[in-house]
Length: 435
Image (cartoon, rainbow, N blue to C red; front, top):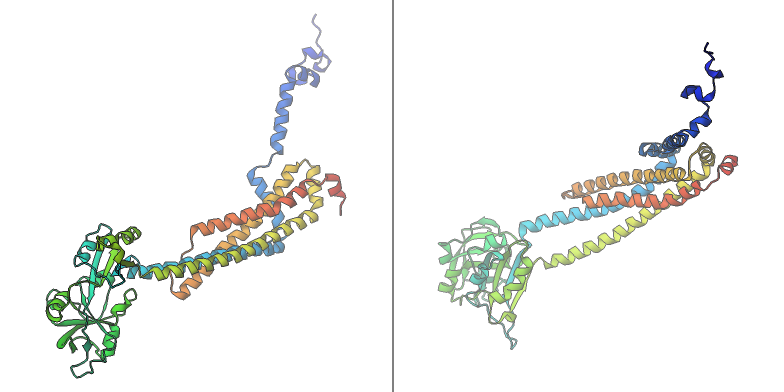
């Protein structure tokens, strides 16, 4: 008769696996199960990215006033940097918009001095050769009519010239330079052959001419004023000039046909190349007798001054950012000293040094990011307000915003590194016993 025993009275080898002693489990595949249990414990001890951010944010929420003050220091530095770059960029955008309307690609070709120091002349074919250059989109010439003056009437003293020059003008001059008319019209193919004149703004004021339709005494004969120009910023020499048609100047005033100034509109992106080729194109035999100038070169000096001013203010913004970084470091050091009990408790519950270090680094990064975002928003707001007040377009370069935020994160990492290392090195027993 077979003996029936309770499971707990059976020999260990005859019991079901779930009732066998732990030593047998270890002897039969127990090492693998131990490793599995070890891996499970290790997984539980790890902190995910969300947990790291949550733990770091909890430390900041516990001291909101201190966090706000520390973040404000960083925000002021970033706002200063963003504001300086944004205002400077907005002003340059406004300047560039104005210059685009006038033309920064306008070059002027004038005769210089010959080998003996005498005044040189532009060849008769110079305007046409310049206009055919691939780098040039438009060209128009003016030529000074020597020994010719303009007066309000034929009773004026010949010595009272008023500083008004008489120029033969190409019909394409307004399109090339960007001339606009105060009143009347520009010369055309018909009026350019007859005694018709267009006065610059200053010349009209000196002659007492209010608009078109009157006659002036020019070169010993009457010329009819067909138009009056507005002031031109890129060609101010035309403001005090009386402009007549090229054919009329040759036929009626003895003009020799040599241009004294060729206004050249270069293609965008080819200004420097055109500037280097104009002298040889205008006078291939003697390019050294040609002078090529760029009216907007004076603006380059202003742009250089703006860059210097921007660099100075960026330096001040950097100092403010450094002060903010010191504030972050100070906040984190004090936080470590005040939270020793918390650090000791976490260490006694199994938190590793790396986890403590990561916690405080995360806090410093969150604090820096908070200040950086606030600084970017404040700097953009300041730029917008100033630009609107000045009537400028608002331009805040994306690289400035990204760079400012990246700078704060770097400052936060550097400022929080020492406090994080110090917190990680605190022994649990010492941290728990310290009041």
